[in-house]
Length: 159
Ligand code: ADP
Image 1: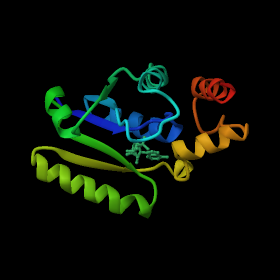
Image 2 (image 1 turned 90 degrees about the vertical axis):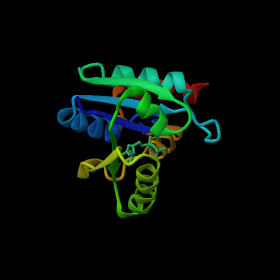
Image 3 (image 1 turned 45 degrees about the vertical axis):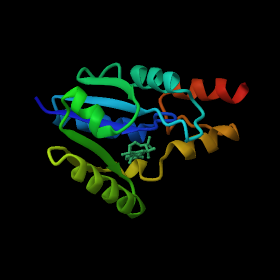
Image 4 (image 1 turned 120 degrees about the horizontal axis):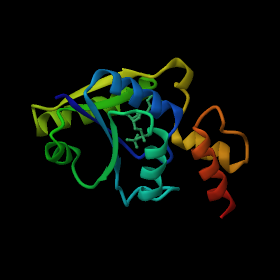
């Protein structure tokens, strides 16, 4: 069984993430969406909130599971019996960093493969940071995130 992991901050999940997750789920037997617990990064949503939003947003994807992890991705993958890392590429600017990470992961564990998927053109400009910026100024994020995330952003901004 081919199990893939799609890791990231997902602060919060966007239609860009969901596109990559859904396409990955069409290729692999199981996709685990893993939220990285990274205390160094200032996040808007807590890990629990991000996991919950992802769970709701992927509820109709039967072979997708949502989890969080701490430490090295490779260690987490071995624990889960996963062999593949799925990453999305938006622009050339993503490429250099992604190549570095993929090379390191290969060095750490040669059995792990990284699969890259080109963004859907429609979402090539889309990132969680952009969504937060737009929401901060109370502009509509309806085209960028699912309704549950839009609601969660409204609540956060009102806090
Ligand atoms: P990170 O903090 O590791 O960059 P993100 O939560 O931003 O994590 O993204 C997780 C994964 O989703 C990454 O592989 C990223 O390239 C991909 N991704 C994010 N936004 C998009 C998008 N609009 N189109 C395609 N892939 C995307």
